[in-house]
Length: 187
Image (cartoon, rainbow, N blue to C red):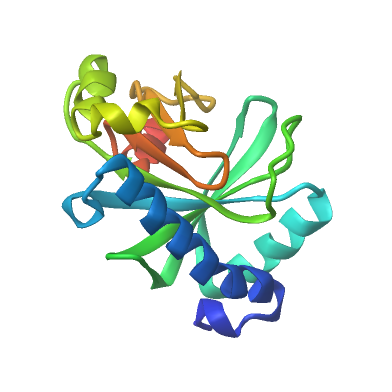
């Protein structure tokens, strides 16, 4: 199977990856978050047009397989299992989330967030995630936290999210791996 970086439809994402890695590293430093300590489950992109999402989808199908496609918050969200993992910071990530555009406009088209797994009780996810962050970091200007519980059709596992962003990059925490969530849809 073709490697991600050699696919024409994904050229803009390949070129954007170093920017994302730098922004992620700088953001983690602000939060006093030790990235290698965590398991990165998957990485996500954002785009403004369906035509861009369709092009990325075509590219991702050349270097991976469609793991799942679900309607979440009124839009399709595709998960691709990569044949060759991407090196992103300290991780080898083999799953990419491709959400089709929704109502929200993002400041940048390209890589937007990484999702980290904090295994354990979904009820305590928020407290456990906050324990990994420096209190003073959460008071920095521009840092926003958002709690949510997105759910796809048929999901049986509660998978709440704590998202932390500075407006350029986002780090999300979940209690379950995305593959466990997809498996729960099929059981």
